[in-house]
Image (cartoon, rainbow, N blue to C red; front, side, top):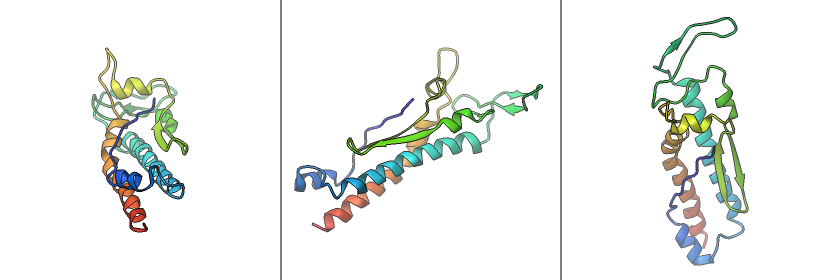
Length: 150
């Protein structure tokens, strides 16, 4: 599952007015910042699963499994096996100037958005909300620095 979001970057329009397109020498700078944003989302999502305490149902230890506490609706998922947290990745496309954080486990979508029988346990949406301002500020500062050189 990949969570994608559109954002408005202050100053990008000014940069494009001056050049008509993103200058070739600025593309790597922009790409590094987009990749950093995807990594921030990925890391925040992982940390919410692994470090935040859970308040859901408690499951006792059984042979071959340790006891654990599940997540309650609205909390990031509990990870008794660690598979979901380990599956979080990021990828980028420098040609399209895109970067994303994602998971390839099939139940990631069910946890993020819920199902008819289970309330959601979001991990990407809260991570994006928590990191978007920092990411936009980082990109906007890079654009401002580039505009000063014109």
